[in-house]
Length: 436
Image (cartoon, rainbow, N blue to C red; front, side, top):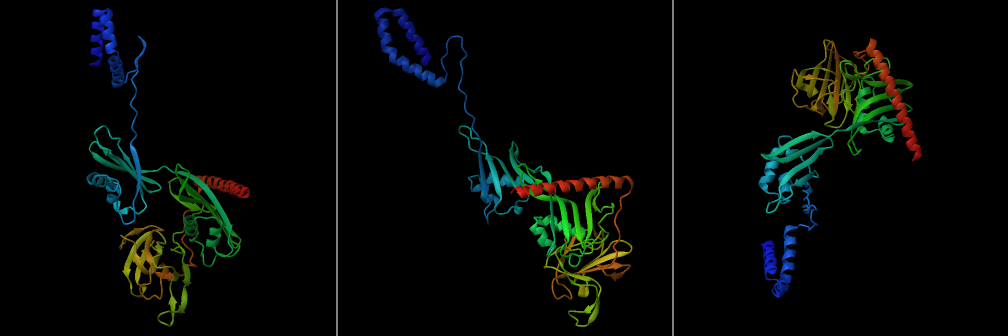
């Protein structure tokens, strides 16, 4: 309307001319200026010379709002979301979608959640667009709004693998030497498990013995270590005798550790199917701690805290599981036509195990307890050869796989590469240590 009024004024002035035109012009000058200002403000148009392009000012983008909330002790996800002002129905629908990929009951206090809200348009309310969190360093879980509701997804975070090395000389114990030289606990456990096929860590370790390890570290995109990976190379020198072991994946895709001759170091049976235990009683005649008279002890005992995991000493089938007199909770595994192993005084069994169950070497089959004729928590372990108990410490274990031909040549070449990588990383670490 302001534009049309201006045109009418100009027309009247042109018709009347002279004094009348001047009076009209003077009378409407202030009104014209005001109308022009209002017109420019309303249209937000910048006046330009004839022939130039008229530009319209852009409306700035409105960024979605982001918020991070933390699950407090004693609270739950519903309470955490509604405390932000989110409607209970919306929070419920988001949580129900989450259940498709993650159980909310597994959430723990301190878990952080990143929330993204849609930018509100004029006369509209803010909506939850996305909820995301990391239940562990390798996984990100997201719940996103769609046209039909909420959908959830769980994705693995891509990790980068790097190698690290450590070495040390044993003065008091392997554990103290490993701790002093920066060997991570998971790596130390892998080292002990690997050598437990041939090494009695209670009797065979002496002051002056030494070790070397090369292992993987997995990092996220920020360069932060997420976890430790596989052991790649290990060496132990015990009483002057060095045994080097190399991880190798054969042509069938099976990974194992082999010595310098290409012989698998994993025997068919483990001598010590438990980690961190103390040998408390050997094989042979002894005075029975409960009965009070001398009796043949047909196994070996490992003292360990109640609940310590017990491993299957080899691949096989569970021949017996349950209560067995003075043995208490008992498992017997048949490995082949000649060998069986038995485990006694257990607190309980791993879930899902029953007679006839197949187990693999290293599988957890139960936990240390003190059931049956027992004076304290320990594992009683037996190896039976042709149905007769033999000394687990002295028996010659069934040998494992041996590489031959082209497979052996490939292994030896790979082992040489691992050894050179270990030497290079050790040198780099020494340079870094000397520069600090």
